Length: 299
Figure 1 (cartoon, rainbow, N blue to C red):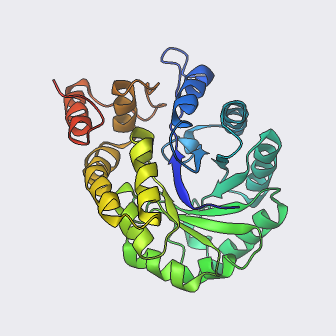
Figure 2: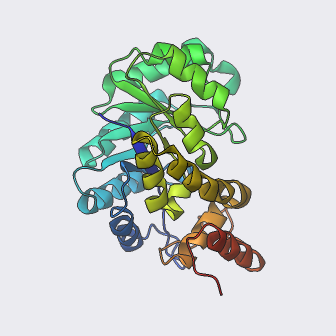
């Protein structure tokens, strides 16, 4: 599986009145995102509010996406749950629904018991049982997650069905460590839109970056320009995207991303409680950031 390129960790739209997953809204968004030069999408990740979705909803997202996405786009879905048994069950259900890869975050509720040995056994069992390739997810450390040691990830990279990692810690030196210590062909993907260009400089093959939900064309062109040696063009695109990541994606969270999608003509909508929408008073900030990034016309 070729994971080189940009992946969109897409949002999950919800009906504003019922709170249920808005399948039509997801279909509308995916049809538009699929026109961009990106490698694939990730459903039910952090930006997709995966931890607020039940297992059946995650599978339903895959079914919708499989109907919409063209064959060349890699369809992956977050399946990391707290037990090994439940994670395996969800991996199998997602694969049956049409997922081509699964993104598995580490179980973290019993943090003190999650030794490298316990995590190694967990990921090994999941990879043995999953019908599709596994991508390890190092979630942002500001969230309720674990810091996976580089040595452990290097061990996991030797499993034939563990094909890559999304590293959202936002530290380039750690990306470089992963590239240097993991097996050849193991895909290291950055999780920060502010580090897409720099991450590729240290050996990452691309990124799963939420800023690409807002600027899929620009992120795809950045990757293509870098790979073609047009580093000046790639650098200019990164300069546009960096502040959008820092101030909107990281600074305002999922509510900000969804508000931006509404302004860009996508189906953003409200987050699922207990997450709250972006306050109305901040929507002007979102518009200004989109204008500065060249994604929305100014007044």
